[in-house]
Image (tube, rainbow, N blue to C red; front, top):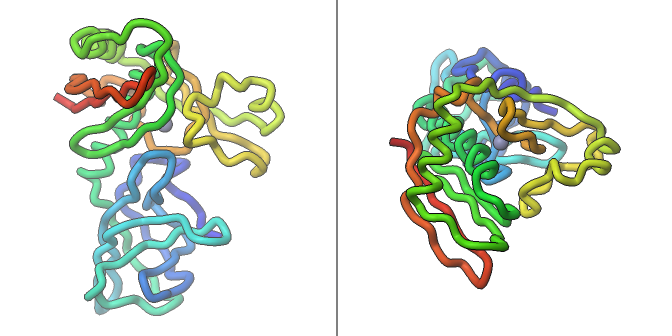
Length: 233
Ligand SMILES: [Zn+2]
């Protein structure tokens, strides 16, 4: 099973790792800095380099056995099992995902409603809410998010047990991306004084890194369901 280096340090941009197995679409590694698609956040892209070759990682997905499959460009060479490879993230893309993902946490604290879905993207990101009362305007959402971001709050991870999570259901905001229960412990993402919820994604260390956010669109997705789209300014 892969050691998930990005869980300890989301800012790791490169690492020397070893190829654990090779399959038709790509490779598994003993340790990985690549985040696999999940929880509304896309899988990472990047590069693997080794003595005598290199390959582009065009997607990263979860594989069986708690593993990660690094999907390689179809025409690229593949390293052999046991090869030491130097892994490099497409950091520009990942960092946009980290800023966007953290911004969505802040938006979930601003808009009063239950989150029914969400998607992180480098250009735009969204959260869907089931709203009880009036629908806020784009301008209001933009202003409220930026007010909170201006405070430059620290962002950190905490761990609780499955039992503690079961006793505090409010920590699971996005029912559509429930955290995995049964592993014994659950990762919580805390934005000091703003948000605390179960999340396994990658985030920035302080909210000031996000910069300014704009709510660009509110779409009607049903009677009470509204989709709020944001971009980074
Ligand atoms: Zn998160």
